[in-house]
Length: 116
Image 1 (cartoon, rainbow, N blue to C red):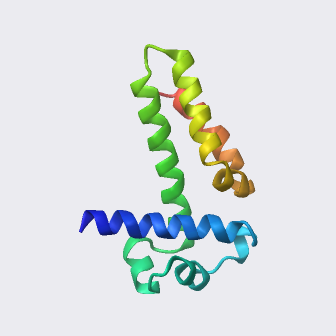
Image 2 (image 1 turned 90 degrees about the vertical axis):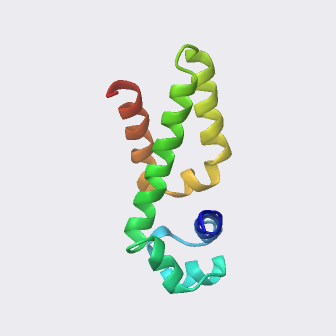
């Protein structure tokens, strides 16, 4: 069950990234997203309350990934920075399209570096 849930969420995220290539964030509907991901709307709502919750979970996923990188590379600041920059580069298609969330990315880095 866990593998299927992970695959479904991954499919939804990938569909979202693809839709962001041609649409503004505000213009993407749940119907478009689920159709592109090949899942039912009810499946989307099993995982997320709404589009805002979906975006919030994506942001939390980003924070968690960056925290894991920082914890892994605690004693090696250069490697930690390289790993974080690599993560952002690998996910740039997604992160750069979310112009309204770019401030979030900067806030995330600030919080992770200075508030833990």
